[in-house]
Image 1 (tube, rainbow, N blue to C red):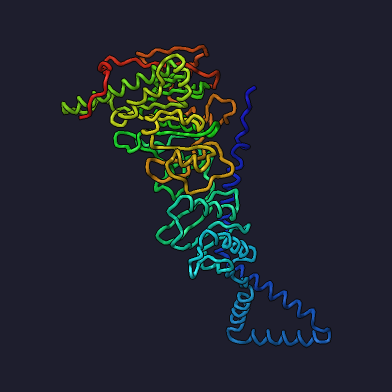
Image 2: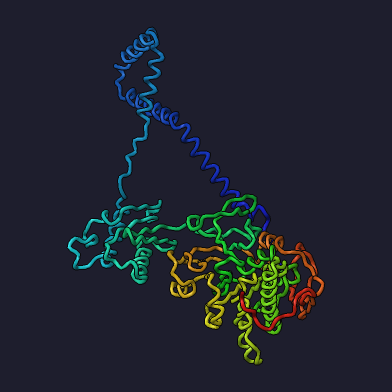
Amino acid sequence: MARRPLPRILSSGSAHIARSRVMARSAADSATDVLHPLITITRGLRMLAGSGRRKWAATPKERRGPALFLVAACVLVVALLPYGPLLTLITVMAVAGWKGRDRTPARNGPSDAELQRLRSLYEALVPYFSVPEDPSPLFAHGGEWDKAFDEYEFDADGRLTRLRVSYPAYFTDGEDSSRVRIEHLLHAKSGRGREYHFDWDEEGNELVMSVLPPLPTDIAAQRFVTAPGETVLGFTDAAAVRRTVPVTEGDTTRDAPPVLWRTGARSTEPHLLVVGRPGSGTTSLLRSIALQALAHGDVVIVEGNGTGEYASLSGRTGVLAVECGLSGALSGLEWAANETERRLIAANRARQSGHAVPEDAKRPLWLVLDRPSAFARPAAADGRPDPQELLQVPLRHGRAANVTVVVAEQFDTLDTLTRTVRTHTRARVVLGAATRDELTSVLGAPPHTTPTPETPTGRGYARLGTGPVLRLQVPATPDPYDDATSEAHRRAVLDLLPDRHTAPGTVTENTGTATRAAGPDAEPGPADRARVKPRPRQSQAPMPTAVPAEG
């Protein structure tokens, strides 16, 4: 039984309420700033009135008559003086302003609880930042913590949100093991359940620990504003990148910092490897990449899971093949290797003759492989080659031929990837829960943040070549044919799918499941497992058997 989608008022009501609260809070703050003098004078008048009532109540009854006569005489004298009422009004307003001022003492230091937390943290760091040979140690039991902690900030609950630590110059901050011990200690003492960022300044012997806000998980698949050859892998912290792209969330549009992966002839990292555990969002990332690639190129998809996660892409314009079996995977990747060689020959001949490279040799071709290791055992049992061996030519010469390879694999079967795949896929993404050693083995460098206790789908880290390790949140791109997909996400993915089209010169083979020849707006039904095998075009040169030497 299909789930009925929630009404729009229930699915998007919380977002509208949150935005309304932010607007109301901003308006209240602005009004408070503008009306602050009036609020101060009103509070002073109220205090003066209260003081007058208390004095009148404390005056004996036999003295109230003379007091009233004295007050009336003073009022009469003031009224008869030139500018008397005006001067009296100014005097009363000045006294009320002085009386109603905010006399809350300014906070000059941490509270008792915060002071105790800083002292305990200082004592915990003493064994790591001190040696017996130091004549004047910066860290010592019972020492002055304010000399080591230059800057600190706390939240409303009294937990550290930022801390700047000065450490001795002899501390081995260049060793990863020494850093890990300090980061683990600060994480444990400052409070778990949050994600911390550690910025080591080796020249200044300083460490800055700060609490990172959670990355937004409500960004759905959409048409991102990027140049040809740029792919949005996800979104990260605003301070980590220099560029933003507009994203749409419901009825609002805002700027978000993306993690951009550049492909093509001038790319330094033309191929991508995605690693994660089941349910971490690797398939969602590959689906997002395929949808973005279809805007400017062609896509060949090889799915080793065999669960029909890419059935919505079958038969779409630009999708040359969606293969789920061993035979289809071998034939599709063999065609991709031959196509890479053909493009190299066509580009070489065009350059030698002084002509431009043909358009069919410049159009981007994407090879998306989800768990190719699943074909290794069936291929060995049938005496057939591993499909990964057919990736040697696209991986080695893909940049010159404008061919991009994207491979997704799980941690359990990561060792089954061939050496060629691991060598040429230097753009890396790790999704889901992973230990520090696993992240370092895949990314080549440890992240400067602590892992979150609960990792949402599509959450992880990315590193492009030798660049920094960035936090990453993949845009939500679920399978639109899955019953558990929300109506908003399903519609977002369907709007990005090209129209169904069977081009001349292609053969469609049905594998037993009913094939749906409908447009992107059709209601999801049974999984479409049609495989489209492209035939060589008549204008293409015969497939070469060897890769020509690059000239």
